[in-house]
Image (cartoon, rainbow, N blue to C red; front, side, top):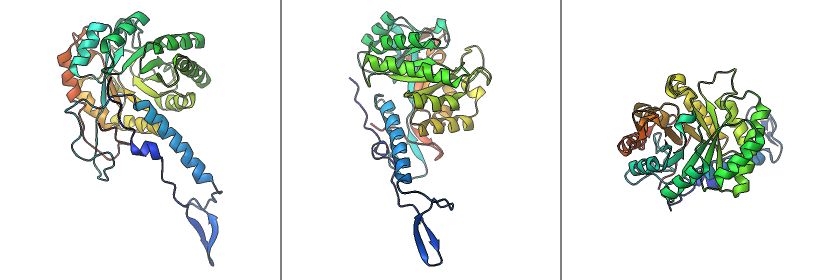
Length: 339
């Protein structure tokens, strides 16, 4: 089995709660706490806020703790987890979508961090059969986490049943599309059903990743930022921003790096893992990494002949080097785990 990485210290201990500033009057302090802007803070308010932030950080830690450490040779050599330098070092994980056992073995040979089971002929989130998923999981043999696409959600009962079946194979997380649904209550219900299915298969065994489409348009869905908030409330582990039309523009052609960085920071603040995908090429990976993503997902860039071709270990290896830890700006919201 792959080694389980250490949970970052900041995730374990939560925020440092400091004594709030006191109001100062003509005769000295009044003894009443202020938030620094004139508002009075009731006793316990800052502690409750700290506990809420701690819960979010713990959720984020649990979402990423099942991922393996970066492969040997890709570890950062400077900076460090608790570095106070303005430049941070981080390693983004590479997820490669595969359709069968042979492709899974090629992706693993090339150094993929996450093996994702998906049928590319069935759309952006085409699901493989449970039998195919079991075969892929068995072939990987615990050397890397396995995830699976479930398609776009429609019915709560069907979602719960499908997630339970897929989670029972031993996958680390499932990806569920809800990016084309504009009704927030409907999205919440579908994600809650997915979380129930995962928990039925075994508490803490499988996470749920909500998928938003960057090319869906405002009228077609809630948008990634709104979906992130709903996903966190529903108990999901993360959010994936992908593209639905695999013949159209890729993610980096639809969303600026500044917007991606803001989105990633907001999802991290909600305690979620963040994956970015959508026709990503090798040259896109540094931009996705600098935006702060935990995972970059690829299919076409890892295949000879494009998305409908076959996964190549050599192409995966070349992509993996683009995810290597490099100094990034201090605007990135956090550093990921070191081995």
